[in-house]
Length: 407
Length: 124
Image (cartoon, rainbow over all chains, first blue to last red; front, top):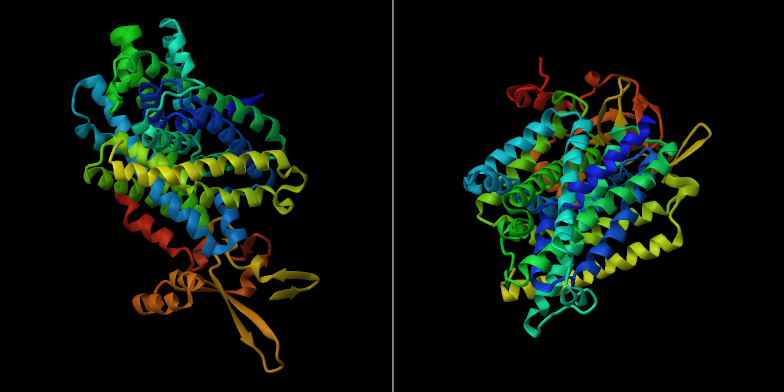
């Protein structure tokens, strides 16, 4: 029975990995600007991430190898550098965005500027990743992640979307000049959800918990429930944006503005709930991102790693965590705003998806690792198709967005 | 290139990039390169496993190895004689404990000189 508690691994991976600064930013902005016109992108991204998370769990449970181990061993050092570098670039931006999300949540609670809370957020993440054993990191955010359900309750309390809003579901209201913005949000939505760091985090987590071949059913349930849970929260936020922010012609240009969507149905309690969800999901995501990159580097170079060891027993791994957090603080000092960072990071991730996921698909079809548990043809095809859509949209929209200077 | 050991045949890919794990189950690094000896009878013999930034840079592009060699003067390059390997596979198990190898010394250096100043690091 105990192994079923591992389901929390999925739910935390979802709260942090699915819902985070990137998703909240893209979902709020999508709803405010295009109504329900981006729900399809969330659905597509959800299918992709459920497939990928199930795959990486299966890979690690059967082969007892993490994803990073396998890339280095199977593809060699030279190839390993590509996913490694793309991860470091994209996830540094994302980590800065998540820390910004934590800081903004704290400023919504206290009224004190988020600029002051930013270093506090970095310190909080450092302390947690420094000493908390793996199951704390897992269970804490999972428990509070349930707060995300308040988005769904808010949609119900507001009486659901009107007929005019519902129409945007299949007929997005994209005006001539808004196409670049729309595509940029599609790319960001896909990139914010299909985050490769999830694969590194999830496969390392499965090792930390000692998953084996008997964990496969559990793995499938976890992937589906966990990611499904995150997806519902994300869609509810889009609907909220569409119901509350769009009629007011708000662009949802800051995370605070997106929070207004929760103030409409529930007043001050709604604002506090939004701040809590922002805090918990960004904290979970920041931990996952910083650990995922450190896991990736430590495993790729063959160092000791693990959250259940004292820091001195995995010194290089823990030093990487510290350095990576410092990098995120420096990125913040350059002066980028967290919401724009989150959107930018998500689009950059979408652009890098083929690099980060191509080796993964090859490994998932290698019987040396998986025996008879290799991927079926249908799931291969689905993963590749969605991957290509994300890549093409990112490729088209990123230069457009830079040229038009929007966001 | 294949390596024959008893009745097992290894490809060079089974050695390079493999995880190095010591007797006390410590992961000290990965194989970056190998060294071979050409014998008078025309056979090549694998003698050492090599780790270090120069060897890794050389894996990316040959000239980078020279560049890194000029910068680092072999300071971080380490060798492990092949005879130290007890078991082959994706993980190469070594006969000695982590203390006995110069590979992975940076782990102890970082623990001793940097992490000890951070509270809760477990440094004694």
